[in-house]
Image 1: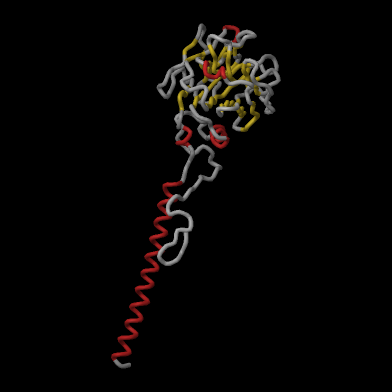
Image 2: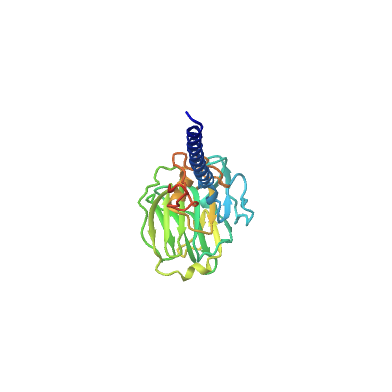
Length: 289
């Protein structure tokens, strides 16, 4: 082969090699970008559950607010610490002694908020048992949740809501109860499942709610009501929790104890989002992502 042909074939080989290297470089560049995006975009959901928490009460021997916002305090006789708990210990309320805990709401009660906690009624089928409420200390106004005599959830106000839940709590065990105020309606959940919702006939009373109570509905115009049973792991948010977040709280392997720090539902695939590059971004070799 003469020298001229050798040079031409050599040039072609170098060109092919250069094109191959450029194509490989482009591929790995795109792969690296996508990998890094996926790495930082996988969401466990746990961090989000900490957003907006304005009160977290583990009831592990005291009434401390784990957020440092404001502790609960006992009015009159204090409920007793009890080992029948979701995590560590809980508090047992005695209705005959009129035991309940209270503090200020620490949220704007007219805007969206959520209360979540575990309740165990010792008088299922006998009395309506109050779990937690926002109340007006001077006007007998309130909003909260009861386990009704028939064992179903009741979202209670002073004559401004109706309806009852459809999920039974008649087994005499703990149930996670969640009350969400969206800003226009109340939504009740039992054990992570949506139960029912109700739109109040008026909302003016919401701005005057100045107490948060656990284990008692003391501003009930028909007479104060007190819980005969246990309460554990109560949390208050200054925002509306989504259906998925409520489900996560119930399905958490750590039983939703604050602060929330692990993937809550181990059977739930993590959510993945790609924000960069945008859809249909064209790279230099014509490929789209």
